[in-house]
Image (cartoon, rainbow, N blue to C red; front, side):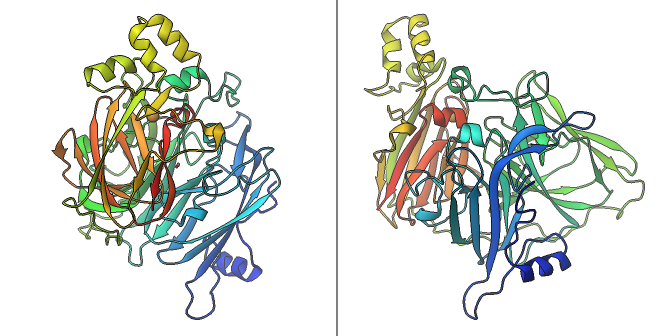
Length: 492
Ligand code: C2O
Ligand code: CU
């Protein structure tokens, strides 16, 4: 059992939260100061019920004994104070993915803090500047720590949220289970590193293999989707329902129907969808996901109640109030080129695209070595991926900045994916606008913190570098990150 059955610190807060239902505790600070919400998270091994009975519990790593960890909810503008206790037998940290926190609170080992040793503690505290759907996870050996279940949702509520009947969070997880139902121990194996990461065989919603999800005709749901998988890309098909995206990566976007009715969420990405339940009372509708060709599966089944909630969908407004993000000025922005290279079959793509892997890329050897030998060599190395020719070595703890960005200035990062694989590219400390794909301006100029880049695709992002420090910039396929696909951007 967790020593902290509830993420509560004070008795008063506990009572208040018990009275208010399942809300997290809340402590009023001295007059004038922002309200502080206090939470305790304990990372430790635990048993979870992933599969329906009679299957037994699965040994996983949990925050406060559950996967996902507790849903932390704060109001925009409040401060969040999280005391993390490390009950693992190894070092850890917690990163607040997508939240624009001060550098020292970003949870990156050796870059923003000393890792939290086994049995150690660390207190994170920051203001929830942006409303939206965020999440938290370790940044220490993430490919294993996240893959064993360490992740949880962090919801920052708007002062005036859009009107819906029900708000639902789905943390999407993906597990590689063995025949006996245990988590496969092959974390960080070379094949995963060099291909599309640890794509598993068991998909969960909120830590459970889902069966059905009860809805009512006429109901309006705000569905917060969070992709917490190491490597799996999700693209749920709501079969006849027409979801409207109102936020991506937590940041409001002009309400729009995603292409083909399907959002595509790479690892770490989020989407807030408005779903009007337009099915018939008593009907059942399967939500499936066919992102990977030939590997489609049923995610969950919507089960309509026999009694409708209302005759037709409500016509309540959909748009969320914008967060106050500094607007990049493209006229004065610096322009920075970033090329991603490596991985199996990457050499071919890089040559086609006229991109070089850079002078120090061992992949350069492959050019001259007629494939098989070179591929074998690359396969036997755990560095597989290159950002502007450099594969990061996480163990060295000494990453030179790949780019230095002038503080409070606008910057464009023009990225080219010269590989045969998808990469969800994440920048810490900032949100950025996705301004173009393959030279075409994007329709919504969406704010994101993680952008999914398809094989051979070119994507431009723009932002104001207003948060000083050395920030991680990496692929969120956690095996790619472990295989060198990360860099540091310095804002100074
Ligand atoms: Cu979600 Cu660098 O991480
Ligand atoms: Cu990647």
